[in-house]
Structure formats: C-alpha cells, structure tokens
Image (tube, rainbow, N blue to C red; front, side, top):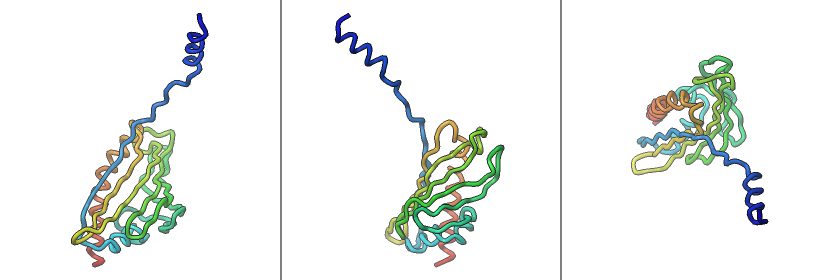
Length: 168
C-alpha cells in the first residue's frame, strides 16, 4: 500500500461520522390589526394584559434577561411550569423570549421543549401587522406541543386583537 492510500484510509477512519441536526418546525401567525403599534405593544408586554390573552406570567418584565414563568397543565413528571427568559426588546417593534418546559421522562405532551417566541410589529396603513414566530420544535419529540400550540397561537393572536380593541 502506498503512502497516499494509507493516508486516505487513516483520514477516513479518524473522521467523525456526520452529525445531523434534528428536524425542527416553527409556528408562524401573521395578522393585521386596526390598532397602533403602541397599543399592540402594550397588550403584548403588560403582565396584567398578558394574563388576559395567553396566561398570567409570574415575575414578568419586558427587560432583556428577565426570567419569568407561565403555569399550564402538568403531565407525567412535568409540573406544567414554562420557563421563559426575555431575549430581545425593541419597544413597539420586537419582543422575543425563550419558552422552555417539559421533562425528559415524558413522551408526547410534557416532553422537553426548548423554543423561542418572537413577536414583530410593523406599522401598516390603517394599523399594525403582528408577525409571530414560535420556533425550535424538535420532531418527533415535540409533535404534540407543535400541534397543540399551532392551534393555540391562532386563538391567542385573535385574543391580542380583541384586547387591543378594548384599549382604543
């Protein structure tokens, strides 16, 4: 065996096998509301108002690095606590936070979830476009959460618009 062939064999034997990233999904909801960005922003970032359109947050403040929680229905080894951390805040334009929960012992509802929710507000003629992206659902582990939240976010965004209408 010549040196070139020996070198090729040695390299192929020592190379790490390709690591594939797991398949992920995201939920996207896009809605235009007849309200100013400031009204939608207040609805999204006021803890009392948040409790009316999604769930009551505990310890929330729209400040980067702030950690807060939501409480939902427990399942198996998971206590139902959703751990969040504010990642980005651009008043009246962008609000993003980590959304983590679940337990490694659970399959389906309550399986480990490590995602990010981002709201982007854009002023448009006659109102505000609210663009929501909830990303990072790892398949198949998060199939249950993805399906449930896909429907849930549609309702939640509708609730944001209804609540904003009450504030005008």
